[in-house]
Image (cartoon, rainbow, N blue to C red; front, side, top):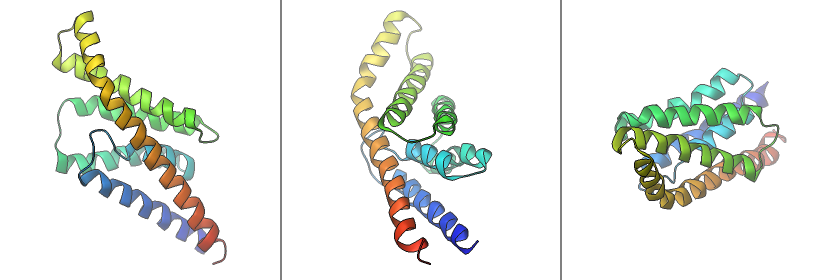
Length: 163
């Protein structure tokens, strides 16, 4: 029971650090929320908590960064990523790539619907202009997901199994 409590505190601490990193200066779309969604889906038994946690983290930081209509699409994308993470048995590069792609498609559909002409030309323009941001999205998702999983695994093996 003591190790479970320590493990939970470790998970919460790692997520807290990841959330704090969203508030620090960073390249556009290089953010921890996909990593948090996949990590929470894998580590928390209560799936409702794993589903709500990345959305809560997003909301708390958005209170500082600002809210707009596009947030509805961003939150929808992360809700879908959380659900996807819950259906995966193991985390692999394709899971992270799928999360990044899902975010790219859903969030940019929102940008198109809210800020571009609702034409095929507007859609193509929106997605074409968004391509450079996809590299940052994928890099951030890989970085934060791997850091969360690796750090958790290392600390758990090194400190919690011997405690």
